[in-house]
Length: 210
Ligand code: PRP
Ligand code: URA
Image: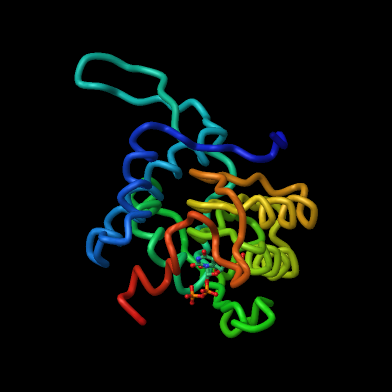
């Protein structure tokens, strides 16, 4: 597999992903699972954050201990479905800022249509983790990364729960500098652009629409 792709298939993630895929799982449980999977994935996606040593005093002695240093983080969900991942990642990094990029896929052409961008003012000085549970054709992720790069963001990671091989190739071809973290690489896209076996429409399942 491409060096820039990390498949995060920890048993806890796989178990929760099975619940997510099951069509019997209702919105409440679906939201909880998306959030928990995002939290577990964030743990791996932040593994390379730089540390620095500081002096502290424990109740017993003076000590040298480590804290996170360097660039600050921003999480950017792609609306709507990426919103479901925000709570989980913020549990891991509560001080991170959150931006939003609104995109939807045109149901006919499957091309992404932008409708909203709101990013932290200092976003170019931050490392950005872009969030979207589904990477299907790759159009939405590719476009969202273009939006971030146009704002001057230099360090971007993309975190999705399920990816299709087609979308993974499109994304890594378009943005080879962006590491991708996913929990599952599925079989293929169907004729409607849905991931097979996938989990259906993530936004609709999260928010109970349709
Ligand atoms: C879904 C999903 C991604 C996109 C993936 O969003 O959350 O953003 O499709 O497809 P792609 O890789 O082919 O671009 P959707 O367009 O259904 O919008 P929603 O989140 O508002 O429901
Ligand atoms: N978006 C989704 O929510 N699900 C898919 O399978 C493809 C795109």
